[in-house]
View 1: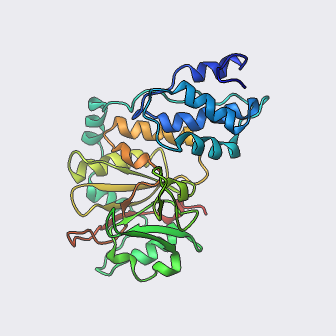
View 2: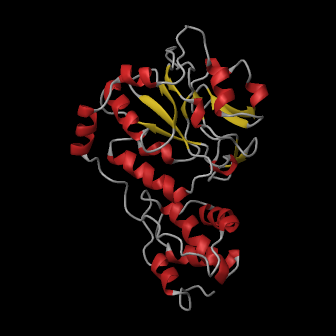
View 3: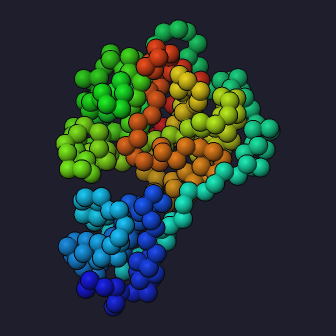
Length: 297
C-alpha cells in the first residue's frame, strides 16, 4: 500500500473518498475502513493512509492507531461478502410526525409497569439483585457517584455498594484501567470497555408517559430488559444486544434518534443511570419494567 489509494479495489477507494467530519461518525469510520484495508497493507501503512486522507480534520491523538489495532480482529478478507458502506451522514433529525403518532397511540407509564414480567412492588432496594441478572458471573463493572467519582471493580468488590451509586457503564469492562484518548490512565475509557451488552435508550424531551410510549414501541423491535427512571425527568431503556453486529445496532440507534432519543448513549463507555440506584439529589432511580427472560447469557 502506498500513501495514496491508487491500486486499491474500487469499493475501498469509494470508502476512502468520503470520510465524515468530526462529530458525524469519524471515529467509527476509521474503524470500519481500517477493517477492509488490512488485506492490502500492514498497520503502519493503514495508519499512514488514513492520516493522509483525513489531514485537516480534528483527529485525536492515537485515534487512528487504536482504530487500526481494534479492527484487526474483525478484518475483512477478500472473498467474503463486502462490508456495508459506513454511515457518513449526521444523526437523523427527529421525525416529529412519527413520534407524535407513537405517543398518541401508545401506552403510558402505567402500561409499561403493567407490561413488566417482573414487578418490584416493595420499598426495598433491589439494585444488587438486578445487577446480578444483568451481569451474571464475575464481570468487571465501572460505576460511580458522578462522572468524576467512579471506579472499575469486580462484581464482588461492588457487592453491597451499588444502591448508593447513580451511574454505571452498561457493558462489562475488559480491564481495570485503560488509556484515554489523551494518553492518561483511567478506570473509565473506551480502551478498557468490553463488548456491548446493553444499548441504553433515553428520551430527554417530553413527559415520562411519552417516554414510556416510545420505549414500548421500541420493545416491539428489540429485546427490552429493563426501564429505570433517571431520578429527574426521563426513562432509561436497556435493550439487550450481546453478540449483535455494530451495523445492525447502529441502524436501531439511528431509528431511536429519529424518535428523539439522546444519541450520547451510542458511545460504548457512556455512563447511564444505575437501575434502582440513588441519584445525587437522593432520589431513587426506580425500575418500572424488568424482563430477565430476554437476557440469554
